Amino acid sequence: MQQLKTNVRRVVLKLGTGILTSGVGQLDTAKINAIGREVAAMQKAGLQVLVVSSGAVGLGMGKLGLTKRPSKISSVQKCAAVGQSILIDTWQRAFNPYGLTVAQLLYTRDNLGPRGRHLEVQALLEEILDDGLIPIINENDSVSTEELKFGDNDTLSALVASLADADLLILLSTAPGLVDRKGSGQIIPVVEKITPQIEAMAGGTESATAVGGMISKLAAVKIAARSGCGVIIASGADPTILPQLLIGEAPGTFFVPEKIPLDARRRWLAWFQQPAGNVRVDAGAERALREKGGSLLAKGVTGIEGDFAIGDVVAIVGPEGKSIARGIAQFSADEARAIAGKSSADISQKFPGRKHLELVHRDSLVVL
Image (cartoon, rainbow, N blue to C red; front, side, top):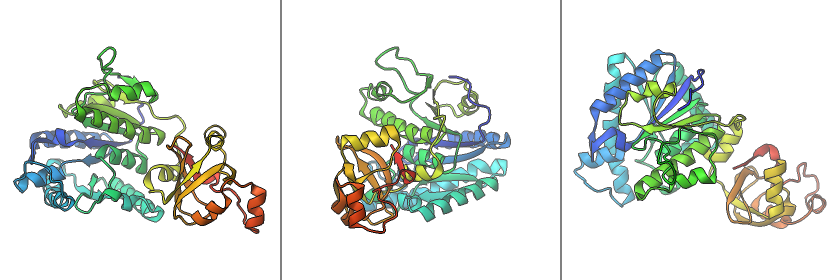
């Protein structure tokens, strides 16, 4: 793996359940203590580290004598409520020898989506890190429902990296990196850009679990890379790998961040908000958004779904049915239905006095 940039100052470390446990409900305390030692050394060297830690549901299952993950949502929430206290206590014990204090942060999408809350969480993270605390971050599974879930902690860790303006995201799991399963069979050391060929490698294993794991990691890489954050995927079997990863001297895959990252506001638009509705567009409008960086004009709109208001975030859906962009609507859903396919001159007549005639202005739009 190539030498990483030397000006890394802020790192997000994501640890999967498979790394932290030795069985259902059984924390691998030796490994957690070792990770605590390495993180303390990183902090002593001047780095700020945020830890995204899985394990609460599994620990709760063990404490309650369950061997299989419940299917009932309330039962999963119960396991998380029991396990989270065990998890955070274990992390604090791991950092006690180094005089470090952990700060537990539990989030759902509802905490990070609304703009005001988003900025408040951002400010809180800055204060916690400035005080030398170690944030231990997890999804708030005890209250999470399907519509509020991040989906997995790979996604959550990428969102945290974006929110905290991190320089590096390290995903430690049972995967040693991105493996070229259809070619050399070796770990790909560096990925400059995620192409369809790179994504195909994620589906090259016969294990359903491993496929899903790498696919979710590549989705997280896309978020982090567009935020200007490099990503490393490596094996967490040996916690002492961390210092070697930081200087590019350990097995794993390094994903290069984009040279011109999205600004903070566009990151919020792209990943933190749940769209209030969909705006379907034709091929011409999609080209204008992708190739010219233009605003979304009503002329190219073919359909409106949902009931959104002026100022709500909407998903812009291309003719193939895929979400291609997100932006802030300047017309309500009912108004948008009335102007879909119409020219700016027609809209000006229908809504005299409107300052902006674009359905979504380019300054409040991000192409995905």
